[in-house]
Image 1 (cartoon, one colour):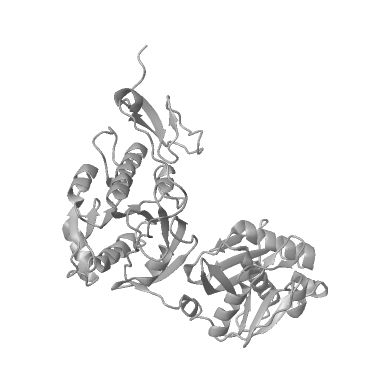
Image 2: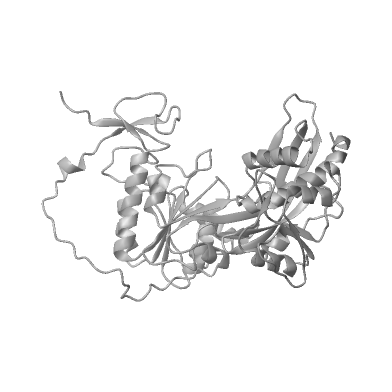
Length: 456
């Protein structure tokens, strides 16, 4: 019996199956299997010639490669200090968030220093020119082309030092008999681009679409193949945009860059802490300032919460910008360790400005915000909070406390509620309030177990 020349590939995770089924066993997704031809490279292209490898030592005897600065400081910070020759960057984000706008601005800045090509597979050349005119970038010497054929792109780059591909889901290679955007086409197109970049020292920036879950569409191996993965985040209701690094072989991860979307394109935000706190009002309950760390940058952001009576059998828990499971943990600790009743109330939590927070140091700030809303007691306006809360209610130390306090002092904050340090230390221009247990914060706000009946 002849071997089948087709297979069924999951468009979400890249798993391959000999037969079609409604559910993928790899990622548990439904209706994601698509029929694609198989390519047995070991039979069609046997290795007729081999060569012995030349091994070398771990000692670096070559000078480090110079980085290419784009001139956009926020982008350079996230990329690790500039673009490395021969590297490949993958930029993902929601539709309409501003990926093409950001990379067109990057291309315009780089083109004044070296040759840069912008290749669009989604828009016509006139559409790209209209965007450049709106951004006042028409005079930039960017080499513009529109195609979806990888072979044509690689043959035309020549002496180009930086190339931007928008987007990888529209590209295809002739050797794969599948539609553009399929797992096999995305994998093959990315492989050819990465191999060309490493061989010729060309920096390639690739735009990647995302799924409805917020992950980059296509095979997961795509993120493993590239050198840097950047996510462009933001809420459509806000004009702030966050460029976040989740993988970087040439710099720190979890670094962020903050931009503001205007009618002239994306503008850098030099002091994001002041911008996120610009809409604060006085004597508002449930509002708390968290001193966080994003990558290497200290960042102050406002956390808002609302605890209201519920008429439902199962009270609602709505979270924007934070982990909903961690909110449930904080509420359980407040009820069990502090004696406060909040299980029969609706709880809404929001991180102002559209920023997403993932570090555990925000636990104390969230707890303070919930206590303030529950007790209808405003928090001190000139106070910041940070600390991790354990299941027994203890407040644990977090890293880079001095950097957090320095950023808070620079913006005029006078008080900081922090975990009780293992060794005493002081900070100029700011009063420290060390806390060992969450009940101490409840006592400070005069929300004690004796008074919990007032809020139950």
